Length: 303
Image (cartoon, rainbow, N blue to C red; front, side, top):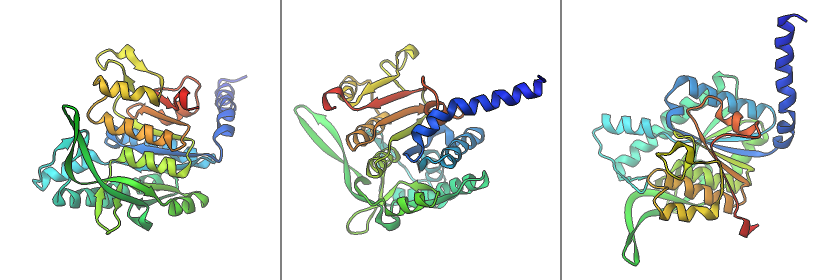
């Protein structure tokens, strides 16, 4: 057998080994939250989109929810608009809200669908305002003050109260990849900035998704971030409060963990926090037994 034939046989073997995973996930819904460094590096960006396109082509109902922090920071700096964070959430006044909407909906969303379509996918861009998809109420940050928990006003930041999946399901039925910018509205039509992790969690629960993937700039969750050997490969959501209380989980990871809990409590089977800096991290997590990153599941006491 020639070397050329051997290489071809190896390629075929890879497809055969993937068959049980394809059968397991065919027809299932998976939501991917895309953000971080994977949005900045062209090679990583194309790898994420290739993964999503492949998932869609083999019959996985794939929804992409994107952030856009680096682009938002860039435009706020150009416009000389100050912006701070509280508990991992961007404090959003009117000027910041206008910039967030412009960047997420007008730039990041459109660039994302263009790139996916260029690579052979079928993507359609949406924001949470389309079809009143993401209905929000004003969200407050919280701080502990002795025995009390006080609310902190962080501006036009929204908490998703309900999700109308009509548009998403219509697109999925026609084999399109919905790409969603996390902007929502309240009952009065006011626009709110929604944390992308939180939006992805609520959308995944509303769709009855099998899995939610959160792409991050770290390998996963650590019990001690300074100790790379302390990576948590799997945990249940009833372990989350202790990690927050001890300060293991803080800042930008707080909304991610909150999203994980909401998604699983809403019926999502598993949530995976994975390293978006690793090429094809989605397929590595989806199509291998060992996987990568941290997987969260429902607590044993709730099963």
